[in-house]
Length: 143
Image 1 (spheres, rainbow, N blue to C red):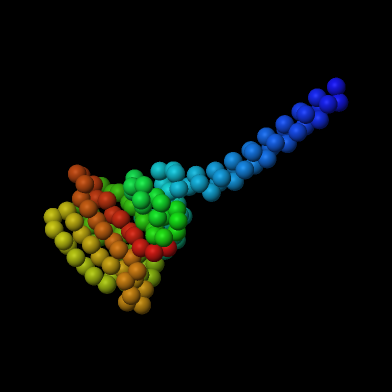
Image 2 (tube, rainbow, N blue to C red):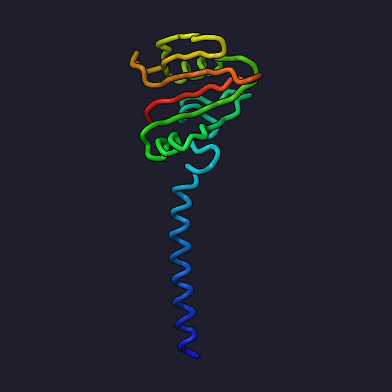
């Protein structure tokens, strides 16, 4: 009988260790696998540069390469969708958060680009694309 108790305790300990290992793995990996893996601080733009203005829906690129780059800390990307064609919608919030607009490029129908930075140095690319009846704005740069 005692031998069965020792075996049961060993199995329980092994399961607890495996469970703890899976918990640590999940805590590290789950954010990069979820649909909003790229949004570091929900409710904010570019990691607390500014509060997220109302009416914007956060998104992340579905590309596996973007996921890998974000997960590795090599790049950063955030996306926001809003109704209508509003290519400059996030610029006031980013400016209020300390970024300067370095360029202003309407690059064709339904496409807009700008570079933003602090102290006049480009750090962040701002792209707006019209997709049907919505605007998709992508912020990308180094973490």
